[in-house]
Structure formats: structure tokens, C-alpha cells
Length: 390
Image (cartoon, rainbow, N blue to C red; front, top):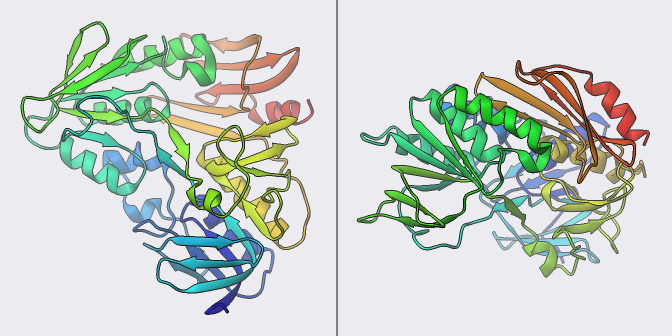
């Protein structure tokens, strides 16, 4: 028998659980809502980790997400066992909680580089506010002038921009030819490179990191395949993430080919009743894309949380929101994107790439599958309508 009962149990301390709690109360949900997260802090926005919070312009309070006063939040607490059939969860406090509906939103873990020297001090992965605190303290130490960012996606590019504004000499190393190439293509990637380089960031594409070296316990060099050496006082590693499905797997939930928890179009976990998934772990049947997708981004997780909340209250509605992404490079440039394309055969550029006032429409077999807006150029709402309408 459970120690106590709640109407709605939210597993995971990120934005998906936060928006779910907000939407449940906004829709008039009665009863107890319990949010359980293993992080040190209540839910907060993660983009500031590489932007304003890392740069010191935003505080922890600025990044926090406001929740209804009557939502119970347990931090530093994990769900150790979940029984979807019995609708019970066992917490790390040994307490057993039964529920009517639950949301599983355990997020993702950083992907670590398994190479020589990975144990050296001065290597940083960014996933939580505490990681940004440690990185900022590290680069503010005396003599920490040269920073290497490994990876050319959001983490690498945003961190490089922010650390440059802090006066650091930054080099970005990436496997692709251009930064953000995988998401936006070569043309947009070349423009991102031009923005970074115009502000003093060195970008080296098409290179592979072979190992980290240091004469003592701290990193001093990044050695590339082929033997080139890049001097480094501090290293930021942003080479992707992997969905945290340990609890889901242990609970017998189906794991899909993309590594997430399989769910239907309503975000209900496959083979269950009353259990929904959201955020980085959700591998769901997307009515927008016409296939199963798993997408990692804060705005997507937030939208999942809202849809899950409505369905937890009986709406029985598919998730129809077109995924939205954004990225800021300090105050130099910003990008907004709807999609994602997951492959395209045509790019149509509107505006002027060199000036940074442009938008790109991505098509596959003649249909609009994604749209990128640089510095506010173009019409994102019209693009959303075209994507959702096929």
C-alpha cells in the first residue's frame, strides 16, 4: 500500500514538468500535484546556462520558472521505481506514492568524450546551472585566457560567444565543416562562422579531437587527429546528449530506435494508461511530421508539458504544435527555427546572407519542412502554417 496518493505525479525537474504543472492548474485541475526532481534547484530555464547566466548578466532567480503555489516540489529526490500498471512510484526517500496520472520527463544526460585525458581538470560539460557556475569561476581564474569549445552545435557556439564577451580567446573545434551545419545546412553554417570570426572566435571545422593533455592534473592542450595541437587553459565540451531512459527501461516501458520512450500522438507512453512522456525522452508519433520523432530543445519540452497536462485531464488531443527552436550568439545575432527538417533537398534564401538579414525555407519533395529566421527576418507564423499543413 502506498504511503500517500496524489492526483498528478510529475517525474523530472525540468521545464516539461513545470509547464505541465502550470497547465494543469490553468485548466482547473483539482487535487495534489507533486513534482519530483533530482536537481539541486526547482525547475529553471536552461538556455541561460550558455548565455546570460554564464556571462553573469542573469541570476538564478532570473532563470527560475514560476510554479503555482500549491504545487509540491521535491528537489534532490529521484524516483527509484515506477510501476505503470499499479500507478505507483517509489522515491529515493523510500516513500511510495500512488497517482491517477503521471508525466515522465527525465530529460537527457550530456554525452561525454571517451578519449585519453578526459579525466583532467578544466574540462566542462554544460547541463545545469552549477556547471555554468564552475565554468565561469574557472575562466575568471588568473591565467585562464585560452578556451577551447569542442562541438559546433548550440552549446559550443553559444558558449564561445558568451566567453568571448568575457574577454577570453576562444577556439571552436568541430567535426563538421561549418558550425550548426547539421541543423541549418552549409550556407547558414558559413554565416554563423562569419559572425563568430568577426568577433574574434577562431573556428576550425572538419577536425577531430584525439586526446586532451596536461603536464599535471589540468588540461593544457587539445590534440587533434593528425597531430595538430591547440593550447587550452579551459575546455568546454558540447558533443550532444542522450535521453535519460534508465527509469523508463527499468519500468518496462518501450524504448524506440531513437533512444526515447515510445509514445503515441497524445504523448501517452505505449502500452500504458495514465502515464505520459515529454521532453528529451519523448519519442512520439508526430502528426506534424507524419512519423515518430524525438527532439531535444527547451521550447519543445515546454510544449509537450502543456499537451500532456491537457490529456491528463481527459482532452484526448494529439500534440500538434510545430517544434520551435532559438539560439543567441551573445548580442551579435539570434536565430529562430521551426521544423526540424531531418533532411531536405532544397533551400530557398530570402533576404541577404552577408548582412545577416535573411530567412531560409527548407523543402523536401516540394513540401516546406523547416524555416530559419536570422535576426528577425521573415515570417515564422506563416512558416509554421505551411509546415503543419504539409
